[in-house]
Length: 183
Image (tube, rainbow, N blue to C red; front, side, top):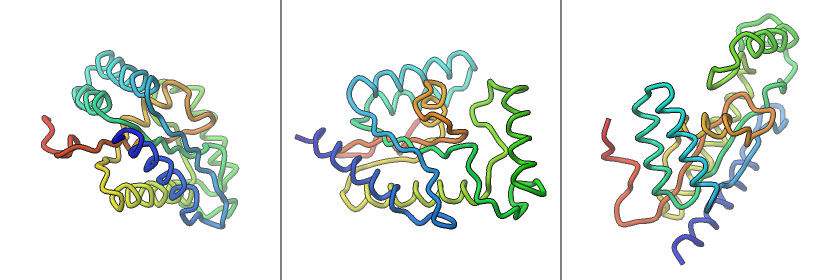
């Protein structure tokens, strides 16, 4: 029963992320709820990345994913921008930013995230993550925002077109597995 309850909360979190406020009302968030065998695949990919790159906290987080009952993945589509030429991304125009994205992808495809990205869209992603985490908290399901889970999801090509992603693994137990973690 606990696993099914956590899966329901993951779906509610996805709803919270989808309906979270977005800059100019333009939604660029890609959402995926991961459960069951996909959780195993996600944790294995994170472990593989950690071992290949010698990054210990990837291995620690892979252990957390292995013990989790579900994971909400949130990403932001790379090619979306709000079209304001605001300069928040570090470029004079949105067109300049998109050209830089293309150059970066061609020259450094192995990076976990790909930028530059629209500053407003990245803020939208953060708001969606916060809304989702709030929903988990309201339902007393332990969670933790993990950049590493997003890296593994992007490596698996699970969030098509996204340049940045995060995961929120979920677990319902007597004590949160996401704190008091080894460093």
